[in-house]
Length: 334
Length: 96
Image (cartoon, rainbow over all chains, first blue to last red; front, side, top):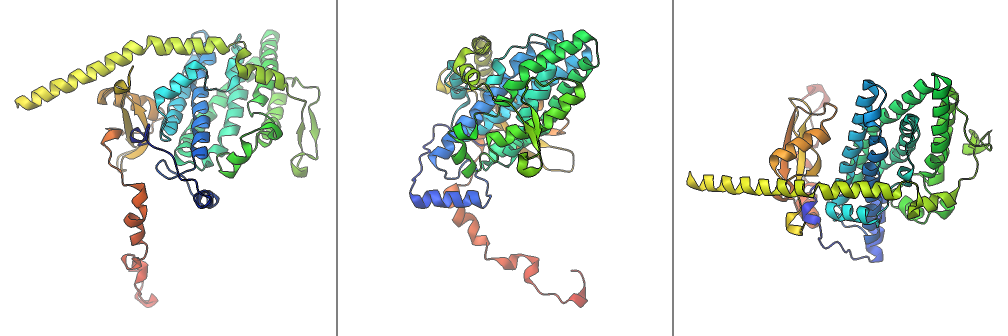
């Protein structure tokens, strides 16, 4: 994505009203914005933050599931989970590359993640104590992520949209493998059904919170919609997710842990939809601020990976340098 | 690690199957060409997307200057005589 030359480059723009209007006109005409195009500083900043957070979420998301690779119940489940976790690493890379086209370096983003300055989706700060959690994550967390990501395939920033197309293509197996795990458990013994219900109870509400604060409380929403970085509001996507997931839970025979969940024929402009109970935003903000069960553990593991890998990165660079020098000597001798 | 030691960026091009051109599909960081090829294989061909991979150091790509987009490309817009539809061929002559 031709970004190396851009890192640290001067990225200011002259933000006269004419410049901003011309930019908005391009967005309104559904033109894609590409890395070298002039863009308002706010547009760049919003994208760097959003794509960076998204990339961090992919790689942190490898941890709760990676936790179960060695303990997957069958070889079939193990190969599927391994492939899924490998995909998440790949998705992180696509997204880091997209962010790099905006002038931020990979190392800078890694440092921001490890120091806690950059956030990732707080869903990954919940623990995965049972195998049913792996089913619930695939089905609900990946399900919610797909709901969020499909509109991003039409995002106005070209490299982000292209990365999201690849991610969405690969991610549909993730949700299906999760649902299959849940289905197997729900058709199993009472103890297996109980394990599925317990995981569902713990993941349902955090999954709904993945769509972010209510539209009325979401500070970045309006401008992002105007710039076509976002295509739907948080509440619209959350409603879509609930409407799609409730029948799936009913199919599995699971009870939705919400006494206020009720079909409401007036929702969705009269097409009907599910009304649901109030979300616990105190819990959401508390987890965002670092008080979730796994916040410290996630960063500790990530930091250990980065620190322990330093000699490998250094050795690889030293090896490349040595081979280059040797080739130059050989070339001179010929 | 200091700035000089930033692991270089590579652009990845994949040929989906023989008969098609290699196409840009993304980028990655790697210390050398061998590792870049290995990483590209792992990251960009996990589902049989490719028959062949090229990796090119991003620094080696020379790109046209976006501020000269007008001079470079707009000049072609009024040269409609470079397209076949500019020329008239009567219907009775048939396909040409």
